Image (cartoon, one colour):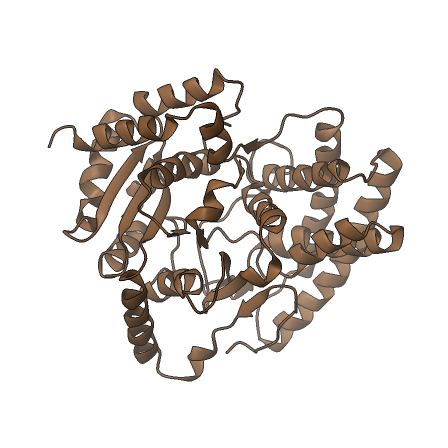
Length: 422
C-alpha cells in the first residue's frame, strides 16, 4: 500500500484504495466517471504500431477492458507502421470498441492522406518530425482537436501487460473530476518483474532520476534559480518516463510534441511552461506495471536504451543552454562525473530497498548500466553541440495560425479513410 506523502510542488494521488475492497472501489470510480461524462466528453488516444496487433495476448485484454467502460465518448487509435491491408485489418480488430454512444476512429498515419497533410505542413517550413509514437500521437491530436468533441484526453500505450480498467479510470479521473481543477495528470507505478523478482525501469531509476537530482543541486549552487526550479519539478515525478497521462483539450492545443525518445520529459517540460503547478498531478495507476523492455545496445547509439538515454540527455542539455546555462567540454565533464557519483548513491538505496523486499538485485549490472549511461551522456553532448534543429513538432495552435483550414483537412482524411469499404 502506498503512503500519503506529498512533495509539495505537484499533487500526488496515491493508491490508498488498496486498503479496502478493490472491486467496490472500481465500481464507485466508474460510476463517478459516467457522471462526469454526462457533462463533458472524454477521449482515449491509443498510439499503436501494427506489430502490436500481432501480440494478441497483450492487446486483446486491453481492448476487452476498454470495451467494457461506459464513460468514453470517443476512442482514437493512432496506427503506425501499417500498409493499406494492415490498416483495414486494424479497423476490423478495433471495431468492437465502436458503440452507439462511443465513436471510434483509426488514424492511418502512414496512409497517403495523412502523408499529404504532413507534406503540406512541411511546405510551410513547420517541422513534422519522423515516424514514431510522438508523431503518431501528434497527428491523432490534430483530428481530436479539430473535431472539437473532447474536453479531456487520456493517452496510454498498447503494450501494457498488466492493464486493467482500474488503470484507465484512475488515469482519467483527476482531470475529468470538476472538483480537482487539474489540467494535466501523469501516471506512475512500480516496475517489478514478478518472474525475475527484480526492479525494472533502468533509464528512469539509473539515469533520469539521479541526473535530474544532480542538476537541481548544481543549479542551486551556481545561482540558476529558474533552472533549479525546473529540475526540482522534474524530480517531483515518481516515474517521469511513464507513457500514460491525461490532460484538457485546451492544454493539448498549445503543446509542442517531441518525436524522439525525449517525448515524456519534453511533455513534462511543456506542461511546466504552460500550467501553474497546483493544476498538475501524478496518480498511482497500478500495483505493478509490465511492458516490453529495451536492450542496452551500448555499441549502437541508434537503438535500445542507448538511443533513449541520448535523446533524453540531449533534450535536457538543449533546455539548459536555451535558458542561459553555458555548456562546454569541461562543464559536461563535471556534470557526467557528478551524475555518476549520484547514480551510485541511488544504486545503494535501490539495493537496500530490494534487500528488505526480498528482491533479486544485481548491483554489479546496475553500476555497469550507470557507467554506460555516463558515456551516453557524453555522446548526447557531442550530438548537441552547435545549432540544433528541435525534436519537437510545433503545437496545433501554431500550425492553425499558418494553415487556418488544417483541421478540416485532417478531419476529411481520417473520416474518408475510416469510411472506405463500409
